[in-house]
Length: 600
Image 1 (cartoon, one colour):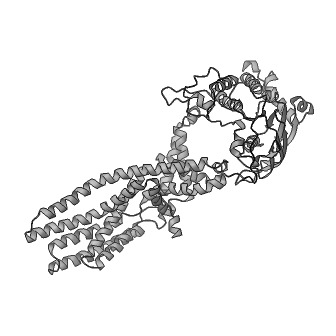
Image 2: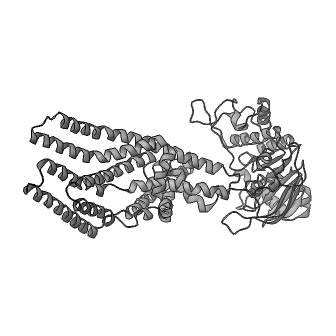
Image 3: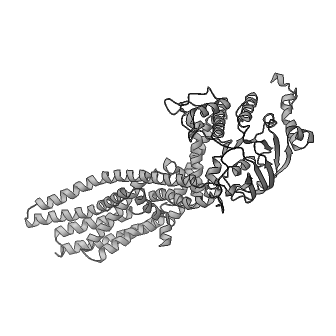
């Protein structure tokens, strides 16, 4: 039973009642009723023929047959409507579970874990119709197939009224088609790692074609045809793999036809012989002949291909829900402490070691760094040196593997994580863009209007838009922003958090989309607005970095240089080399090919 419960198909049927108990009960009830009605109609026809033979009143038999016929016509569209609604409820339920599983853990390791990426793709994309029908259609297809199965079983039950062996022979014969005409590993083969990878590639190629972010480069580099071709090839490969798992085979088809022909021949020969001998009156012959034909519905019903498409996201969500919590968990504190409520915070990092889950490369290997309260520190280094990772650890989106990060003498892991994050304001490279009014983008949790306007002014965005203007073009009253304007909004969000009590500001490439002059002006404003808090800046532009109180150079997971701009320039080490290389672009009269910058 544990193996059965672990199957994706079982999990799909189990989720129906969790999505909507009432609709699920109606769905199952209508399914059984629709499946039984063909056998009931055969009985009703037999009753009508018997009444004609005996000269009895036809009112009752006609009413019986008419009612059955009307129900057969009416229940089908009703069941389809219930299936569509139940499928939509299942989609909503899975999306709710996935959303809670994604945002629930305090860390973000579960969202960056490669072991969970395939299930995440299936769970996110299942209802977009690219890798199969959406859930509301899948539920309808599954219902139609199960109706056929129930109809075949109901007909077999009625056929027992003729003889015990006839329904058994027909059920075995028609059931054999499920094994003979399909690959034996149909369910496993349609949910392999290769199939899931093909689904992911097809979905990615589709997103390239339809999402606006890639539109400019696709056209600029003439990649439109390549994108369509890539999507077509990936989707064709996906369909080939799915078809290979359910393909018909010529030789088993012959055996299937032989088995079905022999079984039906025996049953109908027996029915004919019994009718000729007078052992089977015409009314009963009509009933048993119809249900003998009806048993054949077993071959067309059962667990069809649609169940795989419906069960895959259910199984993926069920695997993700328990897996995400530990993957995104943070170490529980043995002595939880309240984070400091006001003022700048001092940081003391000692012997810090960290590597991302499922990777072997250490990001930090014994990092030591002290940031006095109220000071500004710039962090520089090559790509991959760990600058953004340091910001993630300070926000406690991950816990270090070893070593400590102390906040005013207290290990950050001993602080209440929610309270600590209210004391941190951050602007990451991939900052948040909310399709909400400007007011809510600057202060998602709410803030006085005076603080919002002051933060916008500090970020150089005072005249950007009205506070109630929605920052999205998909709405009638909305507007979109340039990259630099969006970056100013993100800066305003951090500066507003400072006005609400944040004591640590983390700026990860906060002005990358601004020009050099605008960046210098904005950073001067930022330093003024954050002079009473601790500021850590990550940037590749040394014209900005030099304004910080101190600068640290990260390499190979450790601090290799630390000091003010003047101190590091005088030292003549790694920082001086990087600074001079960048400064050449602004001081040289000709470029590397000998061309004058004035002529470019």
